[in-house]
Structure formats: structure tokens, C-alpha cells
Amino acid sequence: MGSVKAELLRLWKWPATWVLIGVWLVMTLTFGYVFNYLALNGGTNTRSMSQQQLISAMQPENVGAAVVRGLPMFGGAIILVLAALAIGSGYGWGTWKTTLTAGPRRVSAMAGTLGALGIVVVLLVALTFVVNVGASITVASLEGWDWSLPGLGVFEALGASLLIAAMWTGFGVFLGVVTKGPALAVGLGLMWAIVTENLLRGVGSLLGPVESLTRVLPGGSAGNLAGAVGGSGAPGVLTDLSGTTAALFLVGYVVFFVGAATLLKVRRDLV
Amino acid sequence: MIVTTEKLTKRYGDRAVVDEVSLSVRRGEVYGFLGPNGAGKTTTIRMLLGLVRPTSGAARVLGEKPGTPRALLKVGSLIEGPGFYPYLSGRDNLRVHAARRGVDRTHVEAALEQVDLMGAAAEKFRRYSLGMKQRLGVAAALLGRPELLILDEPTNGLDPAGMADMRDLVRALAAQGQTVLLSSHLLGEVEEICDRVGVISNGKLVAESTVEQLRGETVLVIKADPIEKAHVLIEGSSLHGDVLHVRETDAGALVRTLVHADVDVQEVRPLRRTLEEVFFEMTGAA
Ligand SMILES: Nc1ncnc2c1ncn2[C@@H]1O[C@H](COP(=O)(O)OP(=O)(O)OP(=O)(O)O)[C@@H](O)[C@H]1O
Ligand SMILES: [Mg+2]
Image (cartoon, rainbow over all chains, first blue to last red):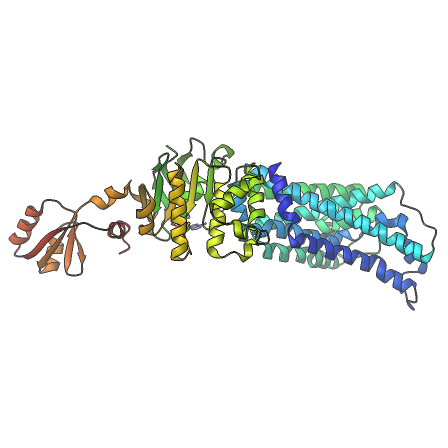
């Protein structure tokens, strides 16, 4: 417990935590509401989206879909960066050394770190929901739409969002521990989340086996889960797998990433 | 015994960085762990804290296996420079550490007081001077009143005044009965504040005794002509400029040997060596 408290205290006072959460919230607002709102009002050319689609995307009752569609790629990338930095920078600062000699066994120290990071990520997802609800209600009121709050289905989207966020957190933690530093962990993670999987999807359209593989890679599974719970119209959202299959793959990734990172942390010499 | 190691060994590849080190630290003493750069001090200390697993051999810290909570909670340590969050204040860093150690946060102020950091407690660690950082490291080590304090080169990078402060602090702690294991490559430091010394060189513990005993071995200084011939004749002698040093008490026999071989003996006198000379001789760093 002391480990969670300690780690939470230091994450809470870490500027990077709030910078990343802030950047994500601003991105969510800008791409989810500001641009759509401008397009709706006086946008001469709304391109692929019909007026009706724009309105639907900003309706308070569709807020679950609005949140979850942002997480497979861009939101995931931000969460991955947060986790990779939180874990990786401890090697350079020498704080892992301080942590591992403080008293608790290594498993507890690692559990404390994961617990605190989990709390921060849950907070990030919760804030995203709150901000989306606020923005959608604002837009609906400004436009004078008849609007209603989301139904119970929103919990499905919330659960999916948390699972996707957990997977990217685990990925970041894993990279931070494996590379023993923030720089390479962040670099590799961003590369994977934003570039590699997309490139593979491109190759997949030529090669069948690669295509099936891309569906179940971390980003692919996240995209498919988002698609299955109603997310659409955002980069990285897919509809190739059932929600259950995608969710099972994500759970598998969380277990693997967290398990492997913990095992490494416990076994490896710290020099 | 507070710390005992038995043939403690760490290999990286086929190089033994710590080679069958058997040392012991007794309750209430300040034990100096002395050795030149790269001798294996930090690696040994890491093994005592469970950060590094020994390749072979064993260690006990306060009767416990190193790295277990039972051992760690009774040991405060500062290894190879302090490891703190740069964006947190000194006080917040200690609060985080106190939470990890399960120590009430009220002890934080006392620890800050002890290392004279009250004035800078609210400043960010990033902005601390080297000396302040080092003192904060000691403050963290003191949290929870550990039975054993392990300080790895605590004066590293400090200016003379900072070094003197750090030594005063260690001495003050020792006066209260605190057991301290302190590593250093500075002889003066060890001579000044340690009760016993373990000298490590190339991974091997080459001596372990009190400071007086270490210095105590008398050495004969011999001036002779030709000096090279004398050097060859006297086994275990070492050439220092135009004189020989020999760890030998029977001066008469030595002189007879030299005279028989037609070496002109000009001077034979005992030398009371400084610890520095003993050290260089042992570690072969002269
Ligand atoms: N992880 C590692 N892999 C390979 N070699 C290592 C590793 N850690 C330490 N060494 C080597 O072990 C030797 C002893 O290192 P150690 O840090 O224990 O020395 P030290 O006595 O603390 O030196 P200093 O006074 O410079 O701090 C060095 O030569 C170092 O290069
Ligand atoms: Mg060292």
C-alpha cells in the first residue's frame, strides 16, 4: 500500500502527467467537437461526412463512441508515452535503485508502480468522458438540438475504453522496463503505435496472412474493440473482429506485458 | 556481526569483478571499504542490498538474506549517488521515500534537520547543488532509523568544505552508536573516520583490519649501491627511486646478504608508512 501511495504522490506532482493528460483532452475536444462544429456551421464542404453524421457524432447520447474511437491510436499513443516515461525515466534518475532498496520486495514495488499508473490512466479515461459529455452538451445546447444523455450502452464503451487504455499502459510499461530508459521506450512505442501497424495494414492488403495478423496485433485488437462498441470514423478503428475476440486479445496483451515486465523487474540485476 | 560475506563473487562474463570477498562489519563500528576506482566496492554493496545477485558465495545483512524486506527495512543506503525525482522538492522526495519504507512522514522533518537541509527543503531536487543532493541522499538513508547505514562514496564530488561536513555527520552518527559501512577511495577520509578498514583491489579483499594495524607493519628503507643488484637479491623488495622498501624485520640478515654479494650498504632505517603508502602497495596502484 505504501508503494502505491508513494508512486501516486510522485506521479501526481509530475508535470509530465498533466501535460500529457492536458494534450490528450485538448486533442479530443479539437478533433471531436471544434472541427466538427465549424464544419457544421458554415463549412462549405463537409467532404465525406454528411450533416446528419456530424450531428450524430456530437450528440451527447453518442459520447461513448466518441471517447472510444480516439483511444486505439492517438489516445493509446499518449497513454503509452506516459507509461513508458513513468517507468523508463526511473533508470536514468536512479529512482529505481532508491525504490528497490527502500524495503518492499520487488514484486510489491512493481505492483505499487502499476497500481498508481493504473489510477492515473483510469483518471485520464474518466476525464475524457467528462470533457466529451461537457462538450457534446454545449454543442447540443448551442445548436438547440433535442438531446438526451447516453443510455446504459455507454458502460460498454467505457469498459472497452479502459481495456484499450490498459493495453497501451502495459505496452509502455513493458517497453520502459525492457529498454531501461525513457527515450528508446517512447521512440519504439510511438513508432509501433502510429507507424508500424499502419504499414503492416498496407502490406496486408497484398498478403493475406499479414492481413489476418494485423487484426490481432495490439493496435489492431484495440481498433477492433473500439469498432465493435460503436466507435467509427477515426484512424485506427477497425471492424474485422468481434468485440469478444478483440477484448480477449487485449486481455492477453495486458497479461503478457505486465507479466513480462514484472518478471524482468524482479529477476534482473539493477546496475 | 552486522554484515558478513563469505567468498562473495560476482562475474561479468569471465571477469570476476568481486572475487571471493569475505568481510565482516561489527555492530557500532564505522567500517571503511577502501579501494581504487573500479575495484568492486559498489558491486559488493549492490550485492549487500540485493540489487545485484552474486554469482557465488553468500552474504548476510543483520542476519537476513540481502534484498529481503527484513534486511532492507533495517538498512539505509546511498549507492553511487542519490536517486531522486528531479521535479520534486527535497521534502517531497523524502515523503515519497518514507511512504515506500512505511515510515511516518513526521520523520521527514527530523531527517532534513539532521543533514541541515531545512532551508532548502521546498526547493526542487533538480536545483540542488551536488553537496545538497548528496546530503538529501543521506537523509533518505536515515529515514526509519536503520541499524546499518551503507554509504557508497558519500563525499564523491564534494568540495573540501562539503567533505568535512559529510565526515562530521558520519562521525556524529557513529558517536550515537550508528553502524556505518562507508566506501571510499580516499585514504585520508577512512583514516579520519573509520574504526576498521577492508581494502579491496581488483575485486579481491587484500586486507581487513583496524587502521592502526594496517599502518603498523614496519618497513625497512635500504640505500645501497648498486641498488638494482640489491633489488634482485632481496626477495619481496620494491624499488622507490634510489631506495628499496622491504617488509622485513631482521635487518642484520639483510645487510649480511647484501655485503656478501658485494653490495655497498649505505643506509638501513625503519619507515613508518602512511596509510596511503600501505594502500598503494597493496593495490598495486603506485
Ligand atoms: N554491469 C556490469 N557489467 C560489466 N562490468 C561491470 C558492470 N558493473 C560493473 N562492472 C565492472 O566492475 C568493476 C567494478 O565496478 P564497481 O562499480 O564495483 O567499482 P568501484 O570500486 O565502485 O569503483 P568506483 O570507485 O569507480 O566507484 C569495474 O571495472 C566495472 O567496469
Ligand atoms: Mg563505486
